[in-house]
Structures are given as C-alpha cells and as structure tokens.
Amino acid sequence: MRRIFWLSMGITIGVLVVRKLSAAADAVKPNALAERTGRGAANLADQARLFFADVRTAMRQREHELREGVGLDAGPEPSTKEI
Image (cartoon, rainbow, N blue to C red; front, side, top):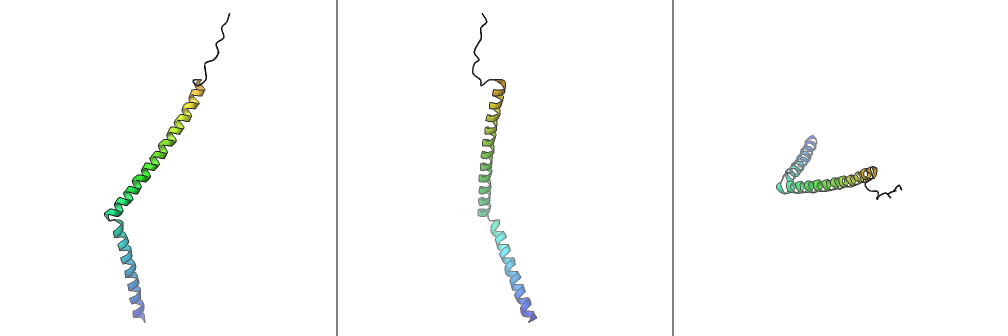
C-alpha cells in the first residue's frame, strides 16, 4: 500500500514538474518574447501619447492664466483723452 502511495506521489510530482518546465520553455521562445516586447512597446507608446496630451493641456491652461494675469488677452482699453 505504501509503495502505491509513493509511486502515485512521484508520478504526480513528475507531471507537475514537466508542466512547469514546458510552460517556462514556451515563455522564452522567440515568438513569445517578440509578442511580449511588441505589447510592451505599444503600451509604452500609448502611455507616452497620453502623458504628452496631458502636458499640452496643462501648458495651454497655464498660458491662459498667465496671459489673463498680465492682461494680454484683454481687448484694448478705451483711451480717455484729457481735453
């Protein structure tokens, strides 16, 4: 009975080890590496695009605040001539 238990335990552990090793080997194949790299590059490009859009929006808002503060956006003030 003990031999059957240890035999089944060894077979189970062997199957699990082989599955883990196969998954690890598949993860380092060139196709899998290229796919992961491509996804990473696309994700990086999307994040950069979003970051620069946020920066442009913040720049426009800050420029508008500065122009209002200095009075550049205000129209020409009516001139009052003293007679």
